[in-house]
Image (cartoon, rainbow, N blue to C red):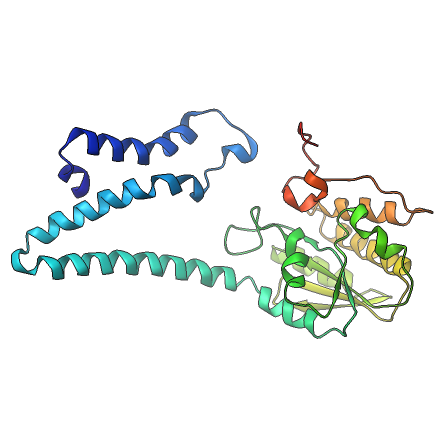
Length: 283
């Protein structure tokens, strides 16, 4: 407010006010639905220079009141603003770290080299304190695969990308990842996975389940096992509707011969958070 008052010239004041207010007014008043109705922080990036101009002007005005100590006061004001921002960012990073991705990654990394990491699934929780709408659990396998380099990664949420694997030969072990955002879902999944026959489930960090095959199997047998695990999960956690995406790919892979239809934006289901998929003009 001090910065706005200090900008007495009409042009500067109008420019800063309009630049900062325009994104807020636009996304508040223009009718929208779905993803387009969400207000993301990045929409304010173009307004950052104008906003910082107002902030700097306000700090300069306050510093002038200190007379000979104006530079010291100005530095203290800037340091305080930076400290507030750093604390805000630090708290958000702490909440993201508490999700437990490091813990599940360590468990996966312990698997023998050549083990196959398959697509993940799960439910979404609160923003920035769990895997959420913007960072959905169906991307968990991709996050883990970036660190667990000794494992072979088969992103089978789209049948097309797993064709080469299911047509291959050899026997290997498999790993599947599941995420339960709510305590009730976690308890139901724990009970269901306790009765598995061909696989064993490890609960990690309270929300994650790392399920691994008990023995090395052929590619087709691993896909069959993965399908059975996902059916068990769907029964235990019915709110996770997106597991149907994986089951759809499994059914296509298990055909004789496998027959796949490209699915998702640009052939990648992970691009869109929607399930069932929304039909667009570019699909």
